[in-house]
Amino acid sequence: HKRLRAEKAQFLKNWIEAWESKDIARYISFYDESFSAPGFNSFKSWKRHKEKLKGRYGFIQIRLDQPFLLVHADKMIIR
Image 1: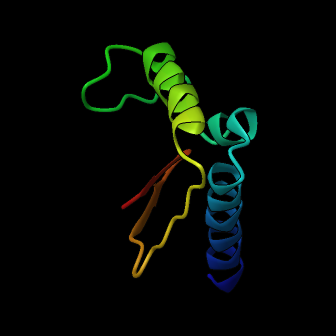
Image 2: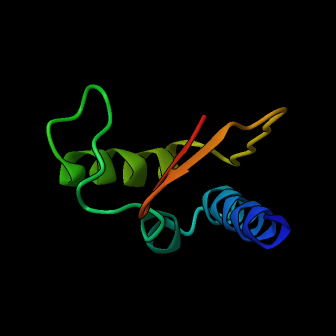
């Protein structure tokens, strides 16, 4: 159980680092192409939106107080 928690914590840390550093290719690699986000009709449109956000902001900072992680089979949901 501890090993799994450590792996997921590292995954989350890497995801945060990718977005905060605006490394879009690395950030997008954390998502499966079947990922869907509210307000976007496809993965490609969501990806284009994220690419535009990269240029819009001088810096990106993510702060998670108490993340909720749900892991089931090969999927993980973080809220």
